[in-house]
Length: 104
Image (cartoon, rainbow, N blue to C red; front, side):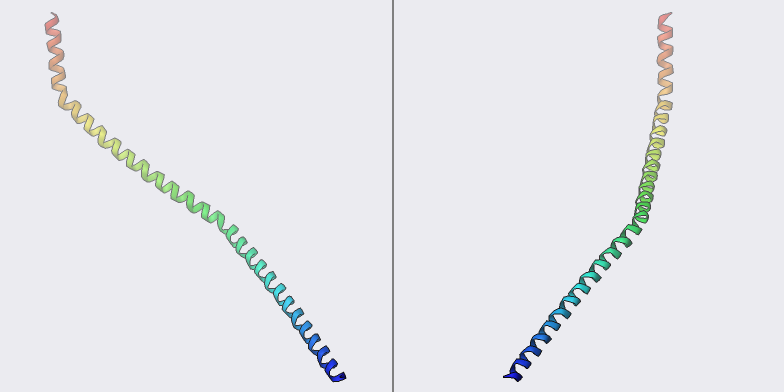
């Protein structure tokens, strides 16, 4: 009976030791996971200025492209209007002379 009790006590002690080791390992894993999450968060926070700069740079590039496109369209429209004005200049002068001559 003493042997049986000794074996049961030893088995219980081993089970407690295993349970304690498992709890310690779980705590270590949780701590490691928390540390890794914090490290990833720090890496992300460290990248925020670069991400922001990249966003600003791309926005500036798009703005420059839009300005260049608007300028090109403006220049094209200006040329069209100038050409139309030149085409109609003779008609306008003739009409003005007709009005002046009719007024005399």
